[in-house]
Length: 366
Image 1 (cartoon, rainbow, N blue to C red):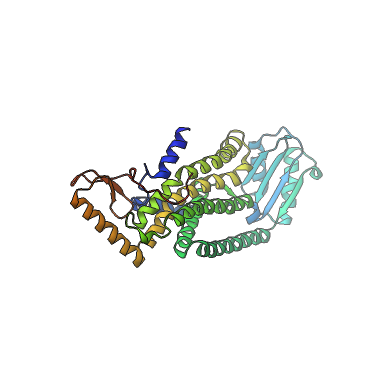
Image 2: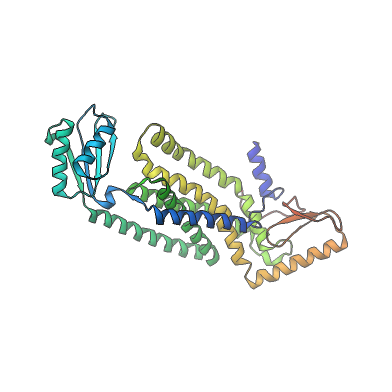
């Protein structure tokens, strides 16, 4: 068995683990800081909306030796607006100019053909009205709203309302970070970006549901035992699915990274950045939120349940009694997800969970 597979098996059995839930305040602070940065970037710099949302014209030239920089200069001189120029694979140029109406676009087309040395009829012009872009944006927001509502309803039925709330917060967290990164780097927002955003929501939800499914099974009949609090059980369940989450995320990120860094960056295919950046940032944020945000949030909400409060008291009382009697090999914790091992009357140290006798998490792992 590989080292990663061995680690996954040990995590599932509870022999090793990391205290994600016990350190939740650290993760909350990190997420709040990242979210504030994203919101500030969005408020200060705004989003660089593509031509599909602002309206304008796209001119495609015949095969030419004109450089991109020269074409951009001529396009900006002819239109009075900023231009985006891309050289396509067949040595043609794609010149995108925002905020042009039909009348001005015809004049720009004629001037471009003259300045770049083409016949006017050889330059193809595609016009996009701002109303069309507005319709796309409105439909995208509508689709996003419907998606969120369906997610909450499904999770509330399949699991419980606390998990639905935690998943919704995690999804909003992922969206905010992704949009903030677009504002920071200034990449153009196109319909491909919207598709990427909707795609990452589905992926983030999948990863969260995998963790929640394991937690649901692990915490079944939890009040009938006095070995673990809900937070500790949530942490054990999270560790049991950790390797699976990491493997899934890495496999998903590799091809997207290829599109973004090799295709869009090294090879200069800038149009790939529209969707690949949103996918890359969103996949990474989704993996982070499902582990560090969603499950700790569920534990926080669940620990307010009177039944879980009573369970925590019973668990801590049992551990105090065991420690007083000097019992060995008894796993203890702080009641918030942290665990330790008592090896003598006064040798309890709060740390990572170790192997326990006769107990396994009942949640799904690898």
